[in-house]
Structures are given as structure tokens and as C-alpha cells.
Image (cartoon, rainbow over all chains, first blue to last red; front, side, top):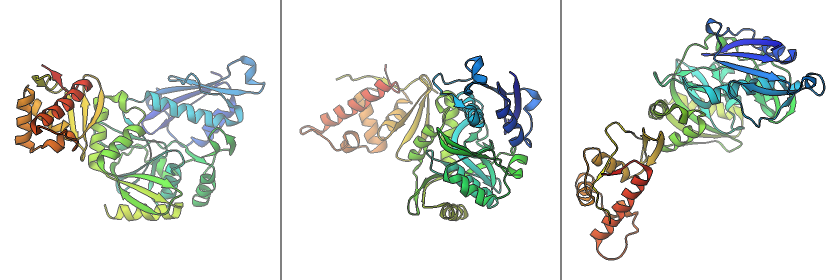
Length: 286
Length: 106
């Protein structure tokens, strides 16, 4: 394709090709401190392309393609090209990853142990991981935690942090020195702004961690903590994994192992500061 | 009523992971994960040792796990002969397990 960029995020190498320069320029800037794919060979290829040649120029709209595709994915306007690239990279992971059990969760690490946070969009996965990182935790990822069936360890996938709506201001206040991508208002997912994980997250992205605590956060409720029984946690995590079925027996062993190893807790919280306090208290009791 | 014998899938055909009151069971042949509650995991454990008729399975459940009528019927026991009710209830649980592929009719 006309423009291309390659990057490695955790153990996964990507090559992104584009009909336009702008999305690639954003990726180059925001991922400038990341390594390249191992041996130069990407695991996944992503394409951002114009369906018709004139659509490169006339009301340019970005179609998403790659090794794995959703046939009915709607194109995005070119000003949201960075979002298109990130969505396409996530899609390759969600549909194509086989080496790891993919958990739709954010993850942070302290003392070699990982805290996983999972929930529906808006539960606060990205925000809480960002706030915890600002308090000294190592950021491992805000979208996917990669569970290695062979070892039971969590591998980091610290892609750009995808901040939505009010989470943008919260993250900017907590991390005033962070590098940010362009503000993309009124996307299909609301206002979006990408934040570059801190230098420590990038430097340590090849260091896995032993999972210790699994949190199901819920934003907008009075503070409450409830223990989640293993059976419920198992079911919720099968739903939170994009490739549990595809991994078959390895996925079953990995997930039952994880549920057996960690404490599972539901955390209702009214705001970020309260959530941090609740999580720190839980962690201190482990 | 079908009296079996019933048997579990060939050795290694099931992966069984007790969680709490639920037990996760991975069925290798289909790749499907099942979530079972009492008495299904106990039935699978006993049939894993060898094929049994309905009556023999009932005896083993009563002996090994002290399972009673209520455990098999969720307390919804028909009036009349208790033993017949228990047999019917166990037959119903077995029929569910056969339907799901976790138990086979030998």
C-alpha cells in the first residue's frame, strides 16, 4: 500500500498499510518508542483503504481490512483514521489470536503480580488502569490481557490507551505529561482520544506477571465490594474472552486455572478516586 | 424406562474442573464447555469408573454421596412411591446428560 507502518505491542507484531498518509503519521508519532515486530515479521496485517479510488480524495472514508475482517464494518471518515487503525488492530487480535487466551480486560502490575479489570464498555477499564498507572502501578494494557495457557502468566498488550468522553479529562488531569493523540469528537464510540502509555509500560512490555486479583468494576454506584464466586467468575470470563471457544481445551485449562488462582471481586464505585482506594484496600489484603 | 447401562465418554474425553457448587466440564469431542450442578458431576464420576444400569447407579449415588430424593428432584417429588420417584428423577438427569453428549447409552 502507499503508506505503511510496523510496530510490536507486547508479543504481537502488526503491519498497518494505508491509502492515506495521515493515519500512518499519527501511528508513527504515537508509537515512536515501541519496538518493531520480531525478525521483521508481523503477526497481523491491517489495511486502511478507500473502497473506490476517488474516495481517497472526495469525502475520504476509511474502510478497515486485514487478515481478519468483519464484512459489515462501517467505514470511518478520514479524520478518524487513527481510530480506524486501532479498531482494525483490535479486530485482528480478537478474531485471530491463538497463542494466548484473550481476556477483554485492562491490566496493571505491582511486585510481579497482575490486577485484571473487566467489564462492559463504560465500566472504567481504561480509566482505572490509567489512574492506577499514575499512582505507580505498571500499565499492562487497557483492552486485552493475554493469558498464556502454558504458564498461567498474563502478558502485557500496552497499545495506545483509548480514552472515551469524560475519561479523557480524567486521564489528562492524572497524567499531565502524557503524550496524546488528536481529539476525535463524535465518533461512533463517542469522543475519543488516545494516550501513549508511560515509558515504564513500554520498556517492561515483555515482562509477564502472575495474575493475583480479578476485579469486575461498575462505575456510577455507591462504593460496594462483593466477592464473586468462582462459578460466576468463570462464566463472566468466558463471555469476556474473544477466543475462548477457538482455543478449545487450552482455553478451558487456562481459564479454570486462572479462576482457581485469583480472588474475584465486584467493585461498585462512584468516581475514580474512590475506585483507587477500594482497589488498593483489596490489594493490601491479598 | 430405559435402564442402561449408561457410560461416560472414553477415558480422557472429559476435563472436569470443580469451581464451587458448579463444576465446569469440557467435552473434548464437541469442544463445548458445560456448567453442571449436583448430581451431574457425581454421576459422571461414578460412570467414569465403568458402565452401570440405572438401578446400580442409583445405589452408588446413595452410598457414595448420600444423595437423596430431594437432590435428584429439586424437591419436586411426585406423590407415591419414593423409590420410583427417585428413579424417574435420575432417569431425567441421565437423559439430559445423554442429550448433551456427556453420557452415552452403552
